[in-house]
Image (cartoon, rainbow, N blue to C red):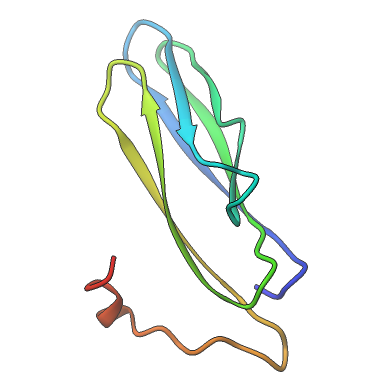
Length: 104
């Protein structure tokens, strides 16, 4: 993605129980390039809630973050977010994903 742009992705949180469940994403949207819209909320019983994650970098580079979230009466979970920012003339070095597994 080129600088000065942003990309959004939607994830779905599913509540298969018969009671409402509260959730909270542990993401500091003031300092991260990955921002969670509606980071705190409620998932009604037996429904799905849509949560949007925005990737908005300000510098050229590769970005990776584990965004942890909590759902009431459940284990801690996370979403892995990966993004690359570039300009037409300036691009970060290519990532060898085979090697990146060793670091993630």
